[in-house]
Amino acid sequence: MGSFADTAEARIMEAAIPSIQKLCEGRWDKLEYQDRVSEACRIFLEDLRTMPLNTGHFLEEFRADLEVKMGELNRRAPSPRFDHCSLDAVFSNKTGETFEGYCLIPSTLTDFTRSEVDDFLLNISPLARRILTLSMRGHEATEMAEMFGISISQIDQEMEKIRRLYSLWNEK
Image 1 (cartoon, rainbow, N blue to C red):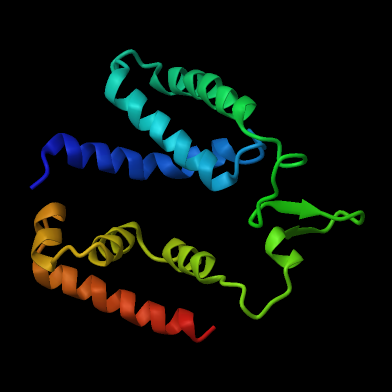
Image 2 (tube, rainbow, N blue to C red):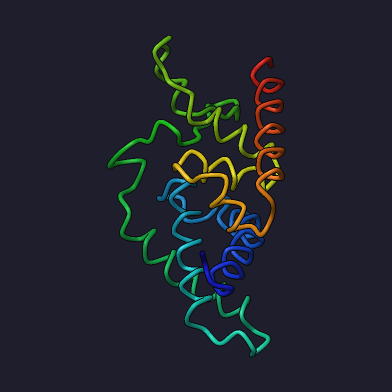
């Protein structure tokens, strides 16, 4: 069973992720978006664990730390223009239309499963997302109920909601 600090930290992280994602949009362009968000979340968690929270300036201090650390990572990253090309990078053509690099490889074998799963996960509640993720990692309903402080029947109800939503989503 996790401690109160672990639970509070997880809730803070969950609440901060949308803001962190927004901070990463259109910045540090030598890094892929997923890498930027992942690294920014790591920096946030590190700051959350090490910076004093009672100063009233945590967010400003985090943003300043983020600028320094992400700027350093971005400088060290290879240039997508010259060194490598990511298939999930966004490109634009002469008319200004944007497209992902996957479009450059026309094939029925292109696997979009990961982006489809990500899309599904973004369309369910945060609790359902955490339950589904833990379930995929092999956690039992009893463990999850204990982690979230809810009953096993509530876990089962959430899993049933996920199944129904997946069925509806899969019909699209």
